[in-house]
Image 1 (cartoon, helix red, strand yellow):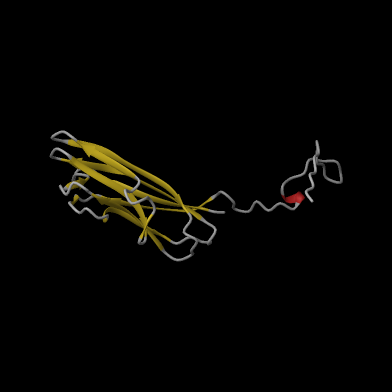
Image 2 (image 1 turned 180 degrees about the vertical axis):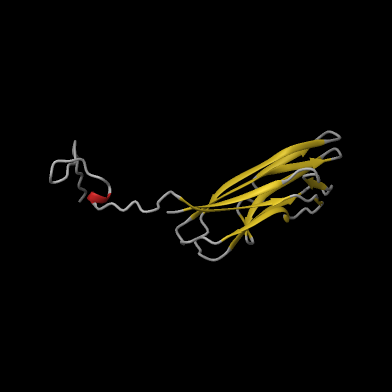
Length: 164
């Protein structure tokens, strides 16, 4: 049996406007940011691997509750110096690819030079209170070397714990 309660107004016993806590609703820290950790990567990195390989920025965060979600953002750049190069990018949580077998994002260069932005974001549910590492992983199916940033720039990874 299903029941539905419909009302136009809820009032306290004194006739006032109730608050969430006076109605017994504990909003606590739901939806608030519990912590933010960030790491900069300022070195040149390159790979010609056809399997996902960790190069670029990484960060470790320890969630305060198993119900917390972790919002991960990676921003930086990629560079190619020859024709017909492709780079697939993804975010890993420890040893788990959070994208699919092709990753989360790809760049393809069909000219002699390309420099492009990397921007990856995902909301993850790690279901743990143990230290968890998130990192940028890349592969190049074409087998030609691809670069993550030049020495003059930086990539940044940020992890934010969203309390549930």
